[in-house]
Image 1 (spheres, rainbow, N blue to C red):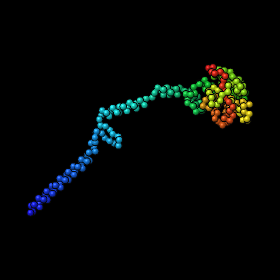
Image 2: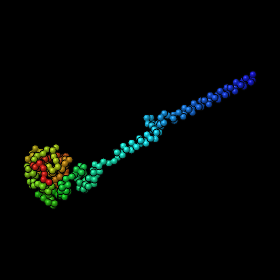
Image 3: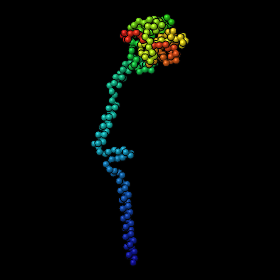
Image 4: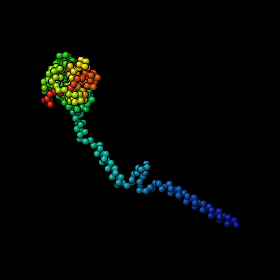
Length: 239
């Protein structure tokens, strides 16, 4: 009887050990399984894989490099643009900043050389030299030196000789006329000031307060005093 009891206990012990070993194998199998996912690829983030096939990986990297190189290579037009900027003079940068324009748009060098030569010359009524110059003498000299045409001496005569142009149609080289004295009701009966339009709503003139300078037609004072634009009667200026 004792022998039978001992045999039963021994069998129970063996069966229990076998169950533990099998259970441990299942646990180990479950832990290892995710590391050998299908397709020999490693997933770092959901939806993103790195294929371990070296040839396909190298091809993908090469394609990416080609695409990146095609983007980073500067086109010839950009190089030309940079070369043009480098060749610009200091006064081109100066007037581009004053008028909030691109430097390369300041391309009428003869015009801006003339303006730069007279810049800050004080206003003097009846004056016509660097000791002092009035507005109409300035535009008269500008037209003669830059465009090669003689225009009348006074602002009133210039207003009469030039074809009238609306503000929205103004182009570089047009004159802009003002009445700085008469009331708004009588403003078209008297022209007392003149300047030359440069573009982007700016004009150059000999100002009573600042001498030869550049102002904007959008400035409240000049906006209120503006009468009309004027264009030289010829369709093209003589260069």
